[in-house]
Image (cartoon, rainbow, N blue to C red):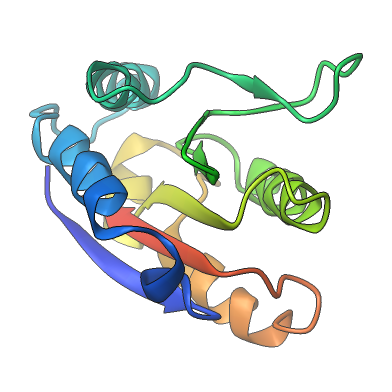
Amino acid sequence: MNFTVYDHCGGLAAVPTASRHEIERAIHSCSITPARGKAREIGSTIVAGLVKHGWSGKVKLARDSKITITSSKNSIGLCLQTGNMARLYADLLKLQQMFLNKAIKAGVMVVPTRTAAKCLGDNIAHANRLQSELEIFRAVIHMPLIVLAID
């Protein structure tokens, strides 16, 4: 699977190169073509690749909470979203909260491109919209963040 990178608020400088390369390898190792019914399989394959490099499974935002992000490692929080567009905003809020609580020092969002999202289904989160809205909400989502747009 291929990807493009978008830097928000210094995310490229804040995420260590080694961590970024681990995420990129996990994405590259996913050979599933985006199509209807494949979103979970794509997500599971990428997460399995991350776990091989020492990334965690789901991480709770708070001890007694059921709210989680996809993974973390070395103070970097990661959300992978191949589902409904509305979940994209929840993931951003979760990462921003963890950043404000000093649980992470930067975030990574892995989401499909607009083209890949259309192949996966209707109203699927996509990087094109995320990138344009991050500019609008720069004062709200102000943590260092990298967006990896997969296709």
